[in-house]
Image (tube, rainbow, N blue to C red; front, side):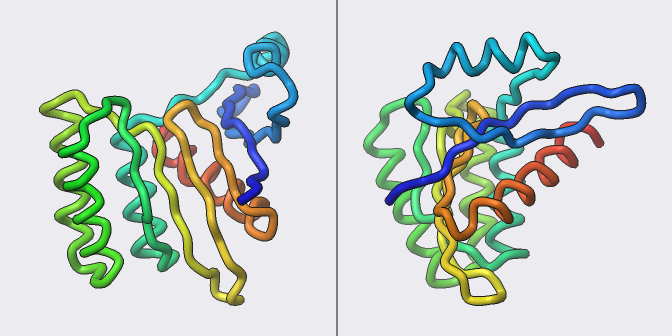
Length: 164
């Protein structure tokens, strides 16, 4: 699948801090892209596992999407298998979302195993297919039909988490 990609930044003005979801092209060198925006007063956003769990809860419970894969910073096949099992259970019955979020919070807090990337899919209220991922380095990738709405929604949610 071809994804449109963007990077989350924040920038302060005289009154508040605002979140920006700035599109980028894979043909542009990533560190050059970051430096260009940093030189213009933007600060990159890193998404913690705690924020990732909040986004999972929101997109599953409020938007009715499914999480179909979670990648971690560490390569542990037993963990991958355990999380895949939990994702399968949650996809068939959302009532088990608490088990997944408890496990993810435990891994982050007690084992220092952080989430690297989360994949979501589903349909919005108009029936449009949604498929996107979110990385801990603040990069979003979304299918063309949902890119605009997903990037706006993620920006708003991350702002609430960071600037409460």
